[in-house]
Length: 239
Image 1: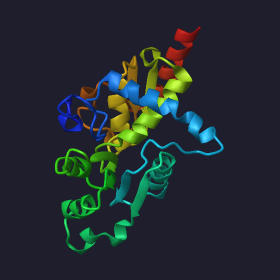
Image 2: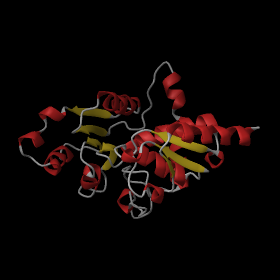
Image 3: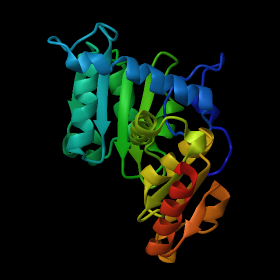
Image 4: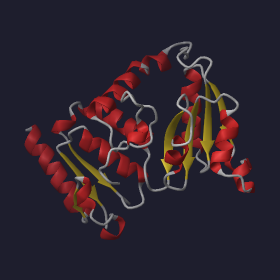
């Protein structure tokens, strides 16, 4: 949750190599990802929902933490881009028999894997793998512990942009258990990077991280107060 840039995500030329967290990304990088995503909307509306962008590439969904919805979403997306997809059942992975995560990854690398989509209940797993894969292999973090869920945050930014447009005119409230939410953390970083006017987090004190204000948010512990102020701001600025 520090403000330090995560350089492991970028190659020597400054191009995005892995997507591990929204923290450290530039507004230009996020906007480019959102623009690219928007260009693919029409694929889902075609009679044949497929393009050859990842033809000949292999994507492994490496889910140590089960999530049928997220895994299926990545599988469908990869197949629509013409990739070969391998889904691994976390209950059957060799790691449950004592083999390390990196050993499992190296075994799969030998099968000419190009991309790993990684999900784990422990924070930092995707970063660990990213530090040990060769330069041609890419890692996407599909959620790690309480740390980050950048793809979900990107989807949320995409939805907000489609609905509201310019983030600089927005006041956004995130309501719930912020302390344990990897999605909220990724949302907060992305919203601030995109210049959101105010990011407000609403939840009981016990479910807000200590020193939450260092993330560039306004904490509110009363639900009615937090929502009422947000609604009042919108009325005043849209009238």
